[in-house]
Length: 552
Image (cartoon, rainbow, N blue to C red; front, side, top):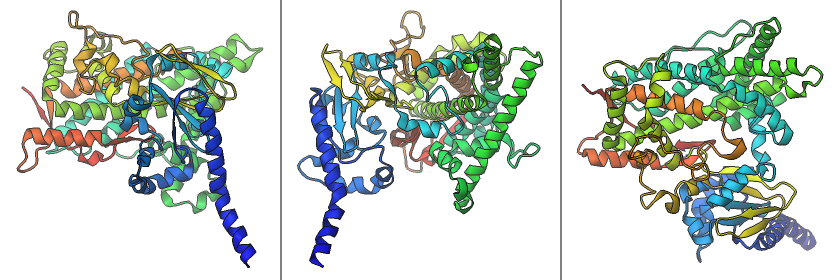
């Protein structure tokens, strides 16, 4: 009996002992780089840790002797809350040693620039690929020659015809949304409404399907159980839940109701995608060479053109699955990011009435007495420089993706820093390009780096937008793998902001017994209470309570 108890004790300790052994090995490897090393007993990627961290970390914060510091960096997205504090203590690059793998965190401008430019050496971190490959591999998940193939075909889809469509749909949606906001005493659905606006812009500019902002649920197409919009809405709520539901297989019937609905949305969206792709391919083969404006049509036609130009070598075109995968990643990349940036920008403008006035001056001058119109893209877009400055400043302070994941794969890589030091990073190291730190670095942005100040993006003599070096502003990443939808998002943001603030203003709700200053301070605290999911999100969106009114 005693022997059995001893054996049970050893077996119970075995996982912990193995973790300690692996942690010691990884710590030793990290020390050899010459960089500072911090220790975490938890890998941020560990699914069990992701689920239990919200309950365990508060307890760990009571650890003595400075051990509670591990709560600052033991989870995905910690760079948002930390920004430059750990870099100030441990250097512009440091390593987090965990039992599973080491994590290199780089907040050095030169180091980040080298990593992003040399994408063959510092590849994408494949841990993120599976959820993004739900409908097929795509530009965001492939590397090497495959990435070059995807890049060549997909780059064609983002063009001025599409930008014109983005402007038209954004203006339409923003006007209709503003109408509902003006009719409300207090708007408490700002975040949800902006999500719907972004969804509708993606449906139109992405797939050629337009909806009114407040349109009711639509009927499904023939042989479908969901409308296209409802299917798109269902899969965009959470990509990790979407991935799980898509791969539930035989377990689907016993899943909770919400997950079964997501699984149905996955099947329906895939069916809609493949139908649209098949229709476009057939039209192209039958001689229809008309230039398309929406992303789906442009992407399919570009792929078909590659097939026609190289019939003997079809590897240069994309399969139906790859086309579907790229269309999905366009939606993922363009949904949370733009909607979230608009939410932060509108909230910050409510907190800062002076910047609102500054913005409205430009919009009212550009539009004069007329309203913002859907056919004014070519004329108005280049002149709304303050709108774009507000977008850039919001992205600087509230970066949707505040650390870009990379990996060293199976080879050693040299990390070059601005100190002119070179550090050799071991194979199989997770890498984080810490753009939250780079974009909040006082050395590059000045002593007022923590202040949200949109005019820092405008040349004081000409009023033109200052284009920062990519290595200092990484909102759309940098290097060869810069986001292809950069201008798509800029046009959507600027068109929406111009419509909302043309002869209108917004203010934070003032509670009984509260001053305007106190209300604005409270709203700013709500905005700052944010965390990373797939992108940055406000934790209490229902607390963003705003009052809209017309300005004569």
